[in-house]
Image (cartoon, rainbow, N blue to C red; front, side, top):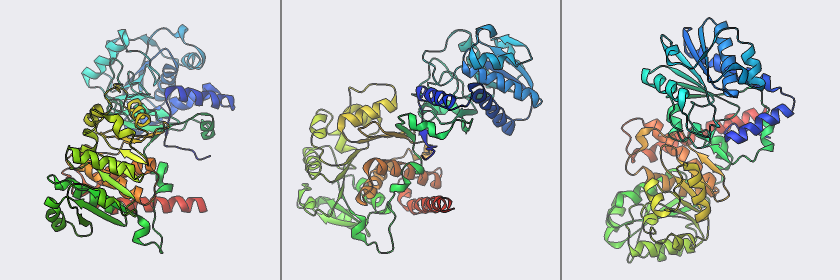
Length: 499
């Protein structure tokens, strides 16, 4: 089976992977030794030898810490080891590795931080199930107050590996070394902001143990969806690449124009804006490669007659009105691929069931947090991944819950967390471009979960190319560069397969 390096494992699933590896003949003591060595190697690659305080917890994370201490001491570091609890309370592999440490083991005390150059946080792993308190809380807060450099083992202590939420307190690590596969908490905020650079280390767990684990969460990387990404052949023509219809608003005309350009740059063969009569001239004067159809009034139904228009986008700049509501319901009734954003979501705030029950075909909803709260007021979980999954099931649609840690979820529970979006992507109109990009991929026949994931990643990649100062108009023009990068990645992957 493929190694699925982009898979994300919850703490419970990671424990399953450990057990499966041990059952397959990899001793647990060796897994712990490999984990500790990986942390030490990552430290040695980034810091010069100095004074290091290794903070060990009472479980396996602490066992990893004892291995780190041994390795760094052998590499010339001055090592101080502190343990939450006592050595005789340690069990299993952690007890064995603690027995191999030949130095002193101190109780947790903030005075151990005096004069240190680096702190190794091996107190608690990703499966922490309660808020940190007592001596552990005290020393972590002191590490943070002093601004000490931190390398976290698995996750910064206090970060919930499943949700990314902070349980009581957590330090800001400069480096986090995790094992086998990342956890959702490495990508979801606020946990992601606490992790610093994340290094994924191979500690000898066979990739095929994933066949025994029902993985349903992934980091949104090209490997997840590149096999479904449309790639026109030499004999392709524009009608084979789909036709996107964008509903244009009467006042905020820039939104629909950005959406249309996003769809075209994502590869749709044809894109049309259906413009209300009072704004037709504005759209027609502004667009060149995008067609503009003049509606008789604000009713989009005549533009839906042509069934070759196989992907529809409604919402950006459309306005919250009875006409918009009627147009959304008309579009949903066609059963064609549908992307709903902005006003098309807000106008169903008081009657979301009317929207959800109207959906007949593949649909992608792209709310930001405010729109999500209005459309799904009953979903109040703090866990963003859980909220997106519940909303996808509730709406029977793919949900793109936008933000710095955008989550894409489908009704069956499969979800992807995006991590490539730079801070400067938070600018007006960027979401309009994204809606068009999703529709452009849908028009070319890409499945709606994969289309949403691909568009979100490409959106972030384009923003990275732009750099600070990005405005939404920059994004469509950068998509050819992103698509070229993806083609190069695909060609390299193909050559590796051939070899």
